Amino acid sequence: MGQCCSRATSPDSVQGGANGYGYSHQPKQAQAPPSYNNAQPPPQAEVRYTPPAMNPPVVPPVVAPSKPMPDTILGKQYEDVRSVYSLGKELGRGQFGVTYLCTEISTGRQYACKSISKRKLVSKADKEDIRREIQIMQHLSGQPNIVEFCGAYEDKGSVHVVMELCAGGELFDRIIAKGHYSERAAATICRGVVNVVNVCHFMGVMHRDLKPENFLLATKDENAVLKATDFGLSVFIEEGKMYRDIVGSAYYVAPEVLRRNYGKEIDVWSAGVILYILLSGVPPFWAETEKGIFDAILQGEIDFESQPWPSISESAKDLVRKMLAQDPKKRISSAQVLQHPWLREGEASDKPIDSAVLSRMKQFRAMNKLKKMALKVIIIFMLITECLFLWCL
Image 1: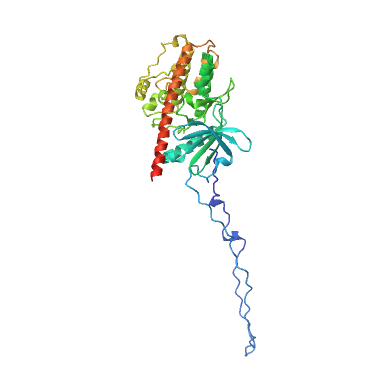
Image 2: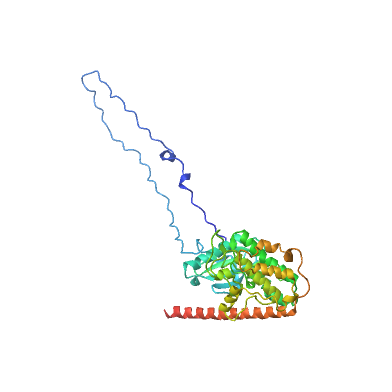
């Protein structure tokens, strides 16, 4: 994150040939031999050999051998992140690394540092994914609703990504903690989510993993800005290319991802799933197993009959339908979402939504946290197993 490579000067920029060294060599003109009028040759003078003046030998300057470039992921020399930041408490843990609170030593400002263990990056594709994530974060940094990128460091054991600290917590936690909720509040959140999609697509990036857990609030203030924080599965869009690898999180995956033939429209689908949850408290496609969820997504039947949908405005339901269109060619674009009357013209009602929505959202959030805890246990077990294996060697 924040790397720059300098290009070597082109050989074409070197001017001149041999004369470019600052001297020229012209051959001497041959001279005619002297003529002698007398028969006898002139007396021969004693010839003494005078050696030419000896200049001291030119000794080339001693050049220290260049430090060999380590086999790095970021393509630069190792740099200790702890020389710039002091790492503090753990903020979160994932499959590849840990996020810490960190403080810039020179200013005392606080940031978040995601430390990615290089032991987990076993394949070439893993390393390319990390490089791409850093490039995308740097590319998008400074845009609204996107976490600010601050720098990237690499040492022997880890890659460290320093970014803006979002101290306001996760999106659903904030909604549940407030205890009251309305369509207008949902519209405000949806606008922030779709703005991320719109900015990404405008700047040539497909996110591919939009979900509530990847959105944090910048501060604890009432009107804190919503920020997208995770770009680990994002890619730069190649025009005309259809993507085929299955990525994302089960509840938010678009049907064309499961069919292995998709483009940037999948981000609008995922944002539509988030909007459905914001209005009802549960995802539109639900099952006990991942396969069941995928089957429901492919079937595409969306429930607008159960509570609280009868009390939700037609304008809100219209937007959800357009965002969750099965055919990506018929799906509304991110720019069109932002122009929809429910978002743009203040049609969203300020009337409180059924309290059951918050209860369902709380249960859904708790279930996801339980899954995360289970994953954390698996990760810890794998780390212990790996340490024991290395100890036995």
